[in-house]
View 1 (cartoon, rainbow, N blue to C red):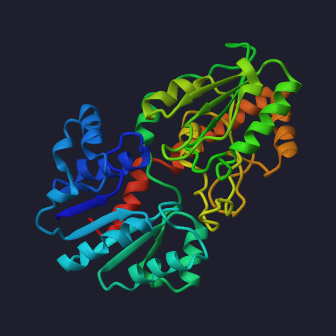
View 2 (cartoon, helix red, strand yellow; view 1 turned 135 degrees about the vertical axis):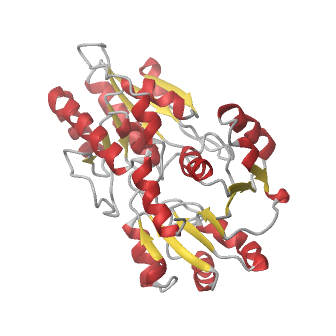
View 3 (cartoon, rainbow, N blue to C red; view 1 turned 90 degrees about the vertical axis):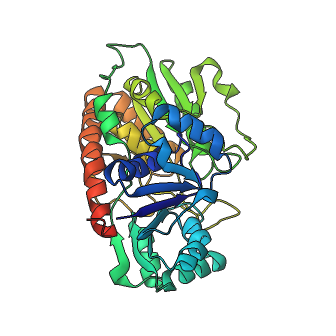
Length: 367
């Protein structure tokens, strides 16, 4: 089967979920080829080629696209809408995954029109959705026929790497003298409000004043076209900032983290008031697979798989409430590290790459 992936960022090595899913298809199917609309294609392809030389020859710039395949595939609604003319020109079926982000936000006339146009196409085969919020929205609005919608919770991330590269935990009071809390996300607005970075900093302010052993770690930074208006100088040497990092960085990093806090919230990005994140964020998934206790919000009630307090800890969108939960775990380390073990087991099971991809293969009709 000739199966073509078309994407706007691949093969950027720092887009870990793209790398995990698209690389899996390329390895599995000889007839699979990826085409990139990435404006930095040459630079990113060079970096990709150094890491995955065996796949680089099957990743091309979109201008090099050749004969039409049996099926086109992409992720995000903006890509499905942008590339729909290609599919129509070639009279070729297509499927896509409707992740949160990538232009998808709720109750927006322009976005709704895109969803309707894509959903009305006779060439559309399947839409994979990963959140109940997404599934309910497109079905309630009638954008896609119910028989074309496949719910697969979560995303495809490189669980195999995190299993293989696991680094044993360093525990506070035993292996290290500091209690380390991290925040990991790419921030899409000046203060990182959508990711809850503003809340995290206020939590850090209170906890730093409460106990001298607590340290904070920030990975990700603001997106390249965003002016970062955050300031961590009030934490002095109690905070370390790492910038953007690739997947290989995290196993060792997370081995020293006592928890990750992700107080992300929906519907607060001014240009896109209906925007929301997936639950849990990809950064939280990677942390959980490393055994780091995951403390995150779930304001849209998208959690349908994890047991709160055992596999994950759901936190309120509230500085004092978060601080209370953190201090409870700080004072009961046995409970904290049991949560970390539960997170690792649950996240590796739910986000197992083979399990996730088997469901996608079935939905896409690849076998």
